[in-house]
Image (cartoon, rainbow, N blue to C red):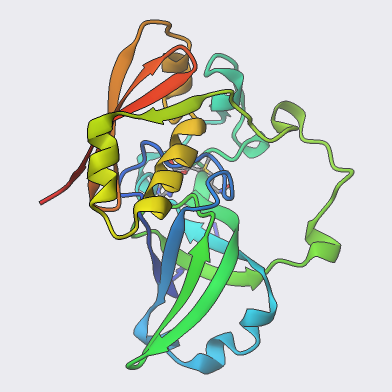
Length: 235
Ligand code: SAM
């Protein structure tokens, strides 16, 4: 069998420090900002000359956290409530042969400082530290296919979940310089209902925790409502 060696061209620095709560696809949480920091070999502006002309980019990356954990022919897509199986190549599952992922993300800017090159991105669905294998511009005339059908994932996953913040959480947010941005970000993540599909079917009120950036966030879920109870900066 042919074998190939791939080397990252850079790494993602993202607010998602754990898999839990990462949206299932890019752009579902538009305020999810990240940096793509190029490896030294690619830290030359020539490598990205002209890239600002593109609003969106394709990132090809390695699912580094799960890539060596194997794969199965059949997987259970969360969109189907975790109950039905589909072929791995009929899904965007993370556990797959070669462990390669692809995400179309928004390019917010290019930064070149003290010999270091980075792309500023938003709408990402990637774990902090994700190795990037390649970048290509998103081409609307070819990549956007309004007539395409997508089986069980035909529509954007909308939830009717709402979000509120306790007085304590509001106070903790207000102490932050990035108050508005952080509040929108947390709200967008929770509206996506990050709970695993099977948990979402449970009715009882439960509490959950996630880390975003260097914050620990706690919330309770009651039916379709998320209530943020605590936002604590990690030490
Ligand atoms: N848009 C990509 C694709 O279609 O190839 C990723 C889709 S995948 C369903 C999205 C999930 O991948 C996220 O919710 C997160 O749990 C997981 N994920 C993101 N970055 C990862 C990484 N570096 N290693 C393993 N899993 C990752």
